[in-house]
Length: 501
Image (cartoon, rainbow, N blue to C red; front, side, top):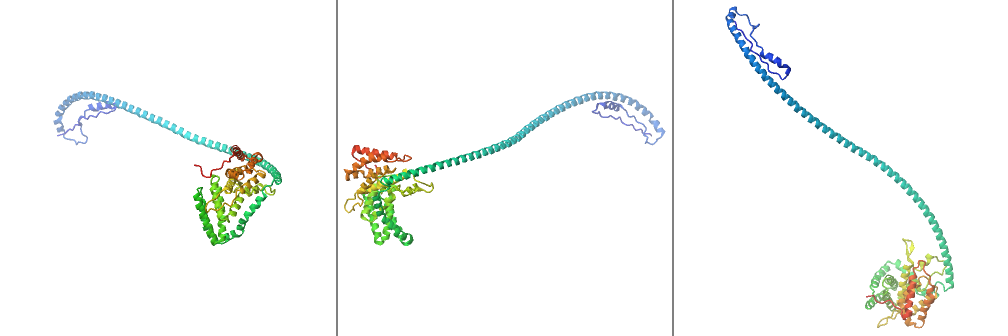
């Protein structure tokens, strides 16, 4: 019996590609009819015949199946067409969406590109600006350096010209100063010559009195001071003894009881030291004289009334300790040579500096110059006021010594000042003297002193030379007003003896 195998109908799946649709349809309608299998061994002929009828029947059935297949195929083709259209629509939609996405992406890329381009332009602009600034700064620095160099050159040139002018001006100034000094020297020589013939530069009797009082001080310098410098034990003894003097002098004031108490302290201290050592006693006398005069210079200028109580203390001490008088009066005449009076300007061998040193102008070592005229005159006026108070102080009272300085010393000094050629400092000294001693001299010399005052006003004041800086003009005017007030009232108004309330 022969078995025949038929291959089944084969369908191909539809492709997404449009070009393969016809091939798909053809492959779909093909019928694979059974055929002999070349690999099948031959069977018996009878077996084939026996099956022939079945095959014929099968062919008929196959035709019917073919018709059905064609119908199904047609339906399938319709379905495929719809599917194809659907796929095409979807493809178009996807393509459209992809196109939109691509457009958006391209737009985004364009935006990014534009932003990057803008950033690059900004960065370039910043970079360019920074480089431009560097170049401009370099140019500015170079320009500034050039200007500075030109400025320095101009300044150096200006400085050089200025120094040349200053040098020239200094030369002219020195030349003018030399001429001025020469003229002043000639004028001084003429003045000295005139002074020599016009009562001189010093009172001869005043110089003799000064030398007499200075003998004690000269003896101290030659005998006692060397011992003080070389003997350590003696110097220590004197140093301890001087402490009480310094402290007590600083405590003196205008109250009478205080003056008496301090006088007793100093008197007892001096006499106690004298009983122990005569040399130490003279050291203390010399130191006390210096301390009292230093107190005069420090206090009288600011508080004129202090001249009274300092003079009273001095009068009491000199009355109870007579050895002190020469130390006090000798040093007073030395510190204020105008009380001699001695102006030292009648010696042609002395220059201005030497005369100023002898007149006790203070010298400033740092400024390399003497103190101004008015400052010197004010200090010297303090000593004159102290002198005026000293000669007019009364110490009458139980147990009190007499004042060894008589008022006649004041009258003598005043007369000498009027009889000598006048100097620039005289109005300050005379006014200060009259403000303290004037009323006492009127009482002591009621006939002579008013005449001396009239002589001073009418004949002496007009001859007082004016200071080159006019520093004594005010003093001349004040002295004239003071005298005019006396001529009207008959009284010389004194400085009060106590501080103003």
